[in-house]
Image (cartoon, rainbow, N blue to C red; front, side, top):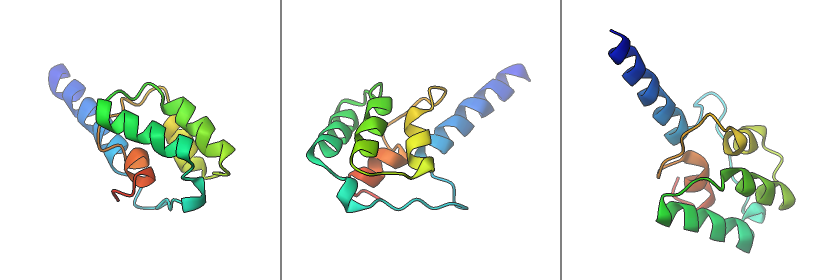
Length: 95
């Protein structure tokens, strides 16, 4: 049973990375889509390397983003980000 619980936890974490909260939908203001923000999101999406998510949060904040859900998701070091991450997809206009 421990293996089932561990697998369920991993799957729940992936779902939280891929899907934003349906109770607090996040909108992306195109003003936040600076060249830096877009380049970082594209690079992470293409390479499937998401270690720069906290830096993306800083770039978004520098661009004027004050959405706590977006910034918090990017800065959450407990999240294993994957291609399909809702913030990266939001930035890239894939949602």
